[in-house]
Length: 239
Image 1 (spheres, rainbow, N blue to C red):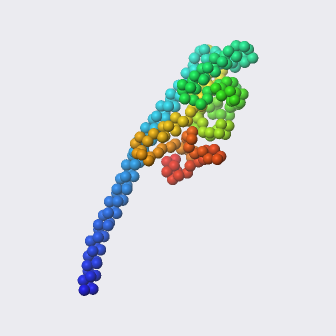
Image 2: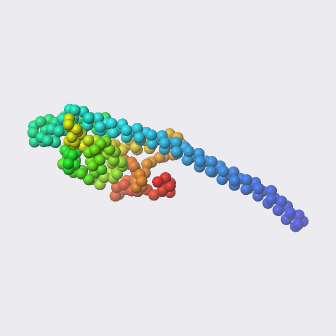
Image 3: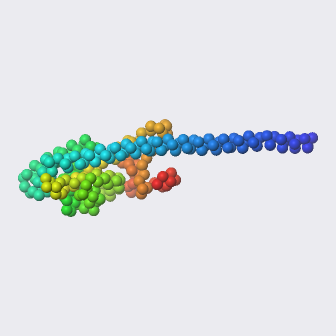
C-alpha cells in the first residue's frame, strides 16, 4: 500500500508539474505582451503630445516675431530707446504697452517685455515691477539679439517658478538692433496637455521632466524650497 501510494504521489507530481510550468510560461508571456502593449501605447501618446508642444512653440514664436516686424512698433521702440525723456517717449510707451498687453493676452503669455540692446535693461514690461531690471546674462537676451530664440524651461529664482521664454530682435528701418522683445510663456498649457487622459485609461497620467530631472510644469514638483527634482526609475531610464 505504501509503495502504491508513493507511485501515485509521483504520478500526480509529474502530471501537475507540466501544468504549473505551462501556467508560469503563459503568465510570463502575458506579462511581457501587456508590458509591450503599454509601452507602444505610451510611445504613441508621447509622440502626439510632442507634436502638440512643437506646434504650440511654433505659434508662440510667431506671436513674438509679429509685433517686432511691424514698422509702427519698430519706430515707437526707437523713440522709447533714444528719446526716453522726450514727451514722444511717453506716447510711444503707452502705444507699445497696449500692443504688448494685447499680445500677452492673445498669445497665452504671462509677461511681455522689451530689453535695451546693450545692457539688457527692461525698458517696458506688461509687469511694471520688472521695469528697470537687467537681464544681460539671460540666454533669451544674448541669443535674441541675433534672431528668434526659445529658452527652454528653467527655474527663475526671481519669480519663484518654472519659466520659459521666447525672444526676437527689434530692428529699425536701417536694420540696426534697437531692442529685444521677450515673451514668457504660460506653462499652464503644458499642465492642461499633460492632464489629457486620451489613450491612457482612467488611471493613466503623463508629465514632463527635463534633462535636469525637474518637472516641466506650472504646478507639479513644488516643495517648500521651490521645484523639487524627481528620480523615479522610469524617469532615469527615459532620460
